[in-house]
Amino acid sequence: MPTCGECIYAEDPSPTLIRCRLKGIFRYLDDPACMEFKPAEKRKDSSQDIDAGTSGGERAISDDLLIRKAKPEDVDVILQITAEAFKDYTVYHLLEKRHGVKFGGRSWSEWKKRELKNFCESSLDRVYVAELNGRVVGYMTYTLDRERRIGEVCNNAVSPRYQRRGIATSLLRRVLETFRQEGMKFAYVKTLEHDMPARRLYEKIGFKELCRSIHYSMRL
Image (cartoon, rainbow, N blue to C red; front, side, top):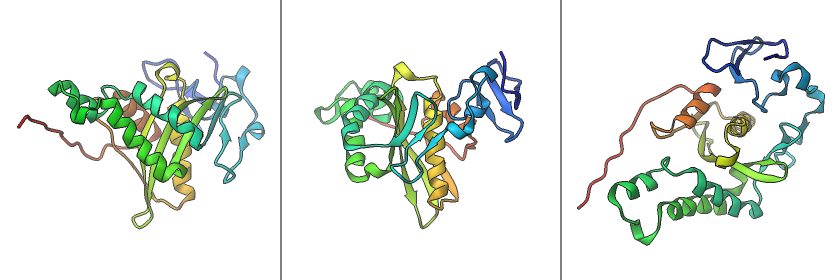
């Protein structure tokens, strides 16, 4: 498989994983987050990238993928993606699965969607969405602790139909860029131990494990 000439193949089972000679970090060859690392025949000149900066936070990662700030009309799609993508990866579902009950008469997805809806209602300016060919297919939320100068990556998901295309990577890079623009000095994120897709994403970007916590439950 050809590369653009700036990268070399890493010693990794995946033949599409490459290491950037310039930045010393690993990327997937088909990762749309960084156009200079595309195969030579598909490489796009960086001058063609669209970056609207602070004007709506929009950025065209590729001809088809746009990372932008969420709008009120995106919320319903965000909630739908949440219900599709979070099964087995949220404590709401694990509790329901273990105890076989709908807590408060609501399913795990209803609780999780309510959590996201509340966040969007209070902090929509801290939600990015990924728009592919005009369709919202993923999102990422975040918070800023200005006193400690820590940015936290919060709920995020990509519709299962559009996973493994580098969309989550593009969202995460945009959020981390926002952290830097907002004066944050550290980035923090947490996930469940068995959520391997999330762990691979965070570790690929450069996050290092800090500690592990354990969740318990019991009937009374």
